[in-house]
Picture 1 (cartoon, rainbow, N blue to C red):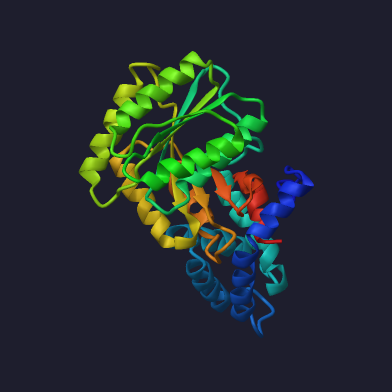
Picture 2 (cartoon, rainbow, N blue to C red):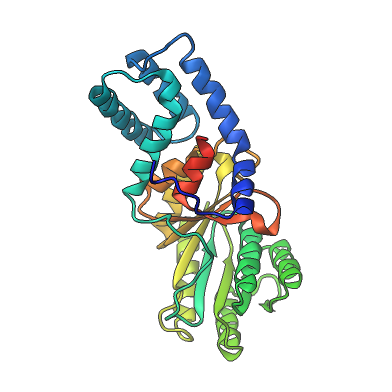
Length: 317
C-alpha cells in the first residue's frame, strides 16, 4: 500500500519495533484467539475483533470507527479471509489516522520564526516528564539548537536535581532556584537567561499536581503570564506528558489536563514496558491535540517523533 513507504532510518525503525514488541505480541495473541477456526471475516470475527481492540486500550470510540471501516470493506469485497485481517487492520487504522492532519513529522524541529521557542511541559508526577525534557533537550542539542532548561517544578527537590542531572549529561544550561521557590519566578528567570544567551529552545518543567485542579490552573496561568513579560507570545507549545503504560488512565489524564490548561501537544512515554501501546492509536484519533513524541525505551534516542504511518506499520507488521 502506498501509505507505507520507509520514512524512518533503519536504526529508528528498529528502536520503534523493539519498543512496541510487548503491545504487538499481546495484540496478536488475542487476535489469533479471536479468529481461531475461522477462515473468513464474519460478524463473529468482527465482534471478537472489537473486544480485542478495546482490551488493547485503543478506546471504545476509536474501536467502533475501525470496525465500521472493516465492515464497509467486507461489504465491498464480499469475501475477506481472516489471514488478511492483519493487513486490513493496518490499512484501515492508517487510513483513520490519516484523517487527522498531524503525526507526519520525522525529525525534531521547531518553527524558524520563533526564537526562542518556548515549550512548557506539564503532566502528573511519575509519568516521565523530567526524563522526556532531558531527552528532548538532547535531541534539539544534537540538531544544533541552543537549549536552556528551567526547573519550575519547585515542589519536589528530586525534580530539580533530576533536571540538573539531565542538563549536565546533555551539556545545556539550567536555571534553578531553591525548592519551594515561586515557579513563575523560575520561569521568568529562565526566559530572561535564554534571551540573553540567544537560545533557540527553552524548555520549562512544571509541577504535576492534578488532585488540586484549581491550584494547578492558577499556577500554570501565572507561569504563562509571567513568561509573556519576557517573550510576548510564550509559551509556543504546552506539551502534556502521559504514561502509556497506564492505558485508559492516560486518556483520563489528558481530559483533566486539557480542562486545566490549554495543551497543544502530547508525549506518550513508557511504551516499551507495556502491552498498552494501542492507547496511542486511540489518543491520536480522539484528541484534537497531536501526539508529537513517544517514549519507546530508556536510551536518549528512544524518545521518538510520533509518525503515525511508521507507528501503525510497526504495530501491525
